[in-house]
Image 1 (spheres, rainbow, N blue to C red):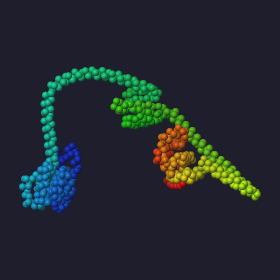
Image 2: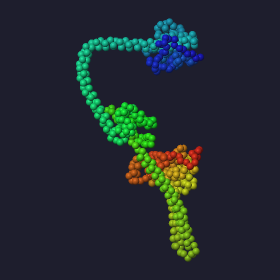
Image 3: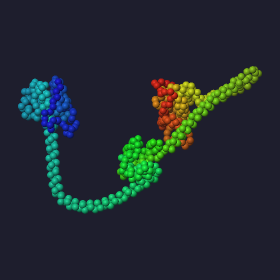
Image 4: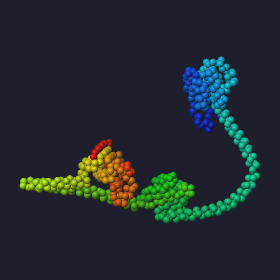
Amino acid sequence: MNRQHHSLLSPEYSSCFTKKEAPDKIGHPWKVIIADDEKQTHLVTRMVLQNYTFEGRKLELLSTYSGEETKKLIREHPDTAVILLDVVMETDHAGLDVVKYIRDELNNRMMQIVLRTGHPGRAPENKIIAEYGINDYKSKIDFTSQKLFTTITTLLRSYCLSFSYDELNRKLEKELAKRHQAEKDLQKAKDSLEQRVEDRTSELGKANQRLKEEIKARARAEEALRKNDEMNRALLNATSDVAFLIEPDGTVLSINETAAKIFKRNLDEFSGKSLFEYFSTKTNRMIKKQLDKIIRSGCSYRFENKAEEKVFEISMFPVFDEKNRVEKVAIYAHEITDMKQAEIRIQTLTHDLIKAQETERERIARDLHDHVAQDLSTSRIICETLFDKQPDVSGEVHKRVSRLSNMLQKTIQNIRDIAYDLRPSILDQLGLVRAVFRYCEEFSETVSIPVDFHSIGIDPPDLNLEMEINLYRLIQEAMNNIRKHAEATLVRINMVASFPNILLRITDNGKGFDINKHKNFELNSKRMGLRSMEERVSLLNGTMDIQSKPGSGTRILIEIPFSEKKSSPGKPAERKVRSLG
């Protein structure tokens, strides 16, 4: 049975609590204590009231079984609205003792108390109501579920009224105190009025003098401001770049002559207007983003922007006031179109140089394999068969010929290794993955460092030859650096096709290094090393991130746009290869 009970009070008391009076109470359940030494009474009461709501709030039923336990629970829950209190519990007057504790010791007049008894003769109703501050007295025999609903509803309304009246009394006391204080203040003000008039007259004389001084100071400030504007304009005109001085909201304070010529307007036409009237939506979006950063951090920022066919480097600098707040922002736009075109030409030439280098490597490797190695193989055969039909040749001569043959064989192998390093034939025959796998095997065998190589989604037909060569060279250069400097005991290489990019990660557990110090050393010593890898990655329009510190190994992450022969990769096929030293 689900019953909801709504207040029948006047509108000003239609809710027990308002947000202003008790924001922590809104929506919380009404607390009701059931104090009785009979468990059956608790069960019946809970069953009857389990779905009861009043003013949209349910009941929180708290149970106790003795007078002392009830006192402790009341101390823990002083905001209890109603207590259903049995008179006879551990003693014949335990419930009455609780009533005295609530009313006398705690001085709580708002809690609604209903005495329930199964022995009316022991505690006569008239006497109890007259002598104790209770709100109702019920016999358990006559206390039906309907009466329980009615009693709870009545007591909750009474609790709300008590709370409201108490709040009104407190407000009234405050108002009376304020009024009394106001009367005292008024009398005090009246007593001091004459003195204040006299003091005010004196102050007006002094204020008149200060006003004259402020007028002079304002005149000096205006003159200083005029000179400051002239200095700002002189500083802006000291550069041939386009220059603006603006407020943080984009209002133009001043520009230089270069900007006025470009926009074909007079200098004074810009003052007071928004900077964003003169640029494209894309440029304005970038400027606003950097302005927000400058205001928040107080740092200067630079970024590049392309307008039509020209490229500009835009620099933005904060100007601070005396409280170290960003008061103005200076913007300089420097045209770098020629520099960007030169960078593109340099990149193109570098690309052609590397391509020519790979072509020459391939030619030299082919000549070494097809001519020099073949000629040496022929010489070795001739050497081994030189004295086959001459049985009289001494054993010493045969030994020398054998040593010569072995030396020729070793030379042939060295030439073939050089040719393979210049251009591994397996790269053309079986593709990048198998070539890297074989290189890792040979690296492990040669330098005794285990290499874990993993490849996912890169099939031989997918990549164009140029990308395969560059990826192979990047791995080769990284492994050479590890062999020479890392002192590592394990290397991991992961190569993953994650369309539209190829991710290459090379990790070692070596001694690591300080990246900034290494870059300076590499630059001063004119070594290539990592710089050559960065250059090769840049030619592929990729990015390279190096993470390392002394004692923590090195991690190189390369990300390159996918460049394929036929079509983008379909479902990745995983290859997992482990090469052990």
